[in-house]
Length: 169
Figure 1: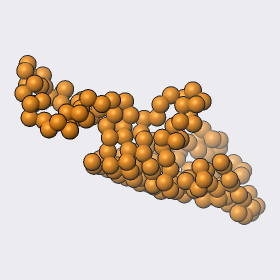
Figure 2 (figure 1 turned 90 degrees about the vertical axis):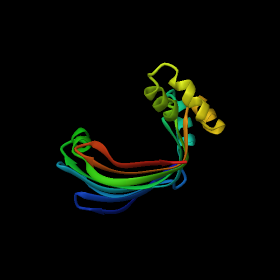
Figure 3 (figure 1 turned 45 degrees about the vertical axis):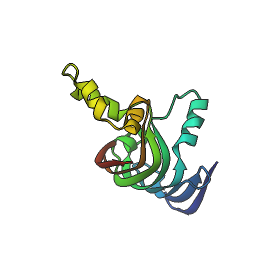
C-alpha cells in the first residue's frame, strides 16, 4: 500500500509526505521540479518487516532477502543534479537503523570465522569439543540469527559507509 500526498506546491518546488507498507515507511521531503533538481528528504522506518517485504520481492522473482527482522530507523538525504542518475550519484546524508529479531540470510558467521582459524589439522575437532551444544547447533544452520543489530551510516556521493555495526544475541 503506497499513499503519498502533496502537502504544498510552491513555484518550482513541491513538498510531499507519504507512507508505504501500512505506515512502516514514512517519507517527508521537498523537491525542486525544474533542473537543476534538488531534493531534501527524511525517511523513517517504523516496525518494517523485512521478511514480509522480501516475500514480495521473492514473489516477483527477485530471490531471497539478505537480512531478516523488524526494522526501526531514520535517514536524512540531500542531493542535486540535472537528472535522476545525477541525483543518485550525488546523494549525501546520514542515518541509523535497528533490526530486532533478525538474521543474516545464507551466511553463518560463527561457522565462517571458526573455519578460517582452524587451518591446523585437528584443531577444529579440539575446538568443537569445547563449544557448548547450543552454539554447535547454531554453527550447523545456514543463517546467523541475532536479537538486535544496530548500525550508523553515512551516504556520500551515492555510496553508503557503515560507521558502526553491532550484532548482539
